[in-house]
Length: 463
Image (cartoon, rainbow, N blue to C red):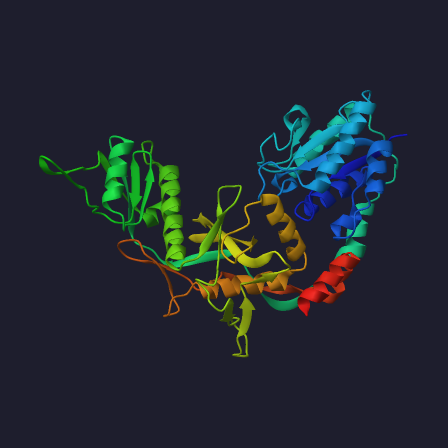
């Protein structure tokens, strides 16, 4: 008899939601199957999973989010999740009498067609409110007569999570400093400007007259921090000025406070144009430092060092609030197997809240010659998984701190050129103190998660 609810999800990104959902379904008497080994990073036994989906599942729930796809792929579902989806499709083909066997739980703003046929499946929204999504799912279970196997409320998923995961690595009472991925500004220019021309050709012509200025060109609009751009056009009849049709002077403090306006540029327009200009200023800073960048599938770019921008590959930095003055040194790139080089990289997303600055995301980029990134997205992903799964919290933190240090100029400052007053960035991440702490498991203990051949590779690389 089919009575199991199988939940497929991306590990570890969607673990929190999946455990929440499984625990509540079990409290209501349903029998739930989640891959508990995979939640801990252990080996997945595909025969067990295939049997659960094909023989005992009454419903197959897919936790549907951006995380089911590879981060640098375009709608390429991760291999493990794709395998479980294929198992579910086989059930649909073999047992057409199972009504709505495959149900999508739409968790974030991912598009409805991350894989072929996704938009044709029943999708329950969980984006705005998990509780409302669960209520809708329970109504569906009731209509489809999904059986309950236990009238006494139990919570095996939550109990397992507590006993096997949380208890071994508990939260403790101690003062601890936490680093965020927020990199904020110390000071900004007071104003920026949006110039609107009659057409795109005029805007492009003025941008070309100011090659050394910080300008963002978008259709017939130019965004800049500089109030007076060169607009003198010379032709056979002399010199004339190509002036904008409209010029909008926007005070950045007003932008941060918010304002109401019905005409262009409204608050959303101003915010979008400022973010593009802000991001371009940082891009120019990286370019002057001769850093390389890699274009990812989401059209963002990841910046990384090479021997040109960082000849020694090493950066020394100090931990804030540490009693010792001894610095720590990290390699920001190095040899990776027989492929070539690995490079620590960051991508940036400009933000106005909670701080004016950038949200940073860490990446690993692989090159064959120490400069140009490997173009094959799948090959990049394979190497990223192989090296990245051996890197834990402390390693990622130290690499990011070292990267921040590497961006400073000779005066230990980070100043972005604007054409007027410079944008001065802080030289460290935003941090906060907490009264609760956590003992990160030692790397040697965590090696038990790896297969034997992986552990051998790790020992070779460490030596």
